[in-house]
Image 1 (cartoon, rainbow, N blue to C red):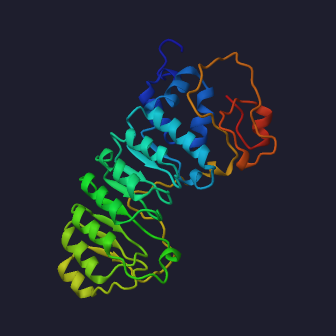
Image 2: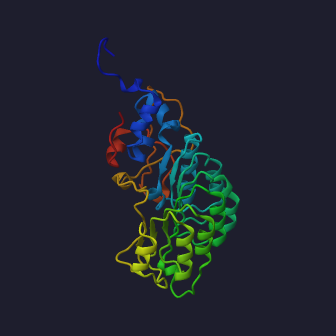
Image 3: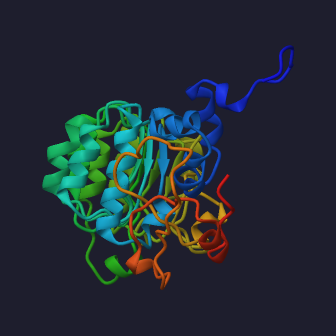
Length: 320
């Protein structure tokens, strides 16, 4: 760097600043391109600075379960206990739920839609999720009132809950108010609640409203047996916004805490390595780690090593 320059070299920025900048990049680039630039950038992305918020929900919807577990373990390990927000879909194993709970000391927002957790697993890990303020367990078909009660009793800071169901999972079944009563009896601080397509009655909804005085938004789309008078709601709960039961259009996600990654990064074929990245070596020979057939189901967990010819073939930018 020239003496007297008004500009500071990027590789001289502190890791915290680099992590803040890199967190605005697509996950693909953070894991595969940034580590190849220089030692300081490699250190920033292999440390906790980029991983206080982890959103791999879109990617997890179409990856293999074993790849998902390895990726999640790697990223959570890198957070070094500083993880505040985690968004991932379709988890299957008890081991990965326990791993998340073990590293949830700072976790505030947790989205686990379409995951295969059970009541017993939730009861085991709920005490380690005490800092959670927002939880999404929508479309988790194996949990019920027991799990929600355990969450409510242990997550005293909870102000947002998504517990939407798929209409095909509830069609033709009798009313089941047990989850609604579990919410009413254990989650008094709720401000945002989604229970779309639940088989609940008007009585159980009124119990939630009387037990959660701070509730400002309630999603009842598809809860066809709930009958609430508009004037009654306006008089008794003037600050409450109720959506439904009439379904105007398809509804799956909410605007409470948008975790989606609108980047087109997931359109690329990309590879990772499960584990810590080795020491950066400027003289290291490039090797081709690309799957020749380029099929997602045969994806290997490896880092992009900067082979420019392969990079151009798959739409990657050349390695710096």
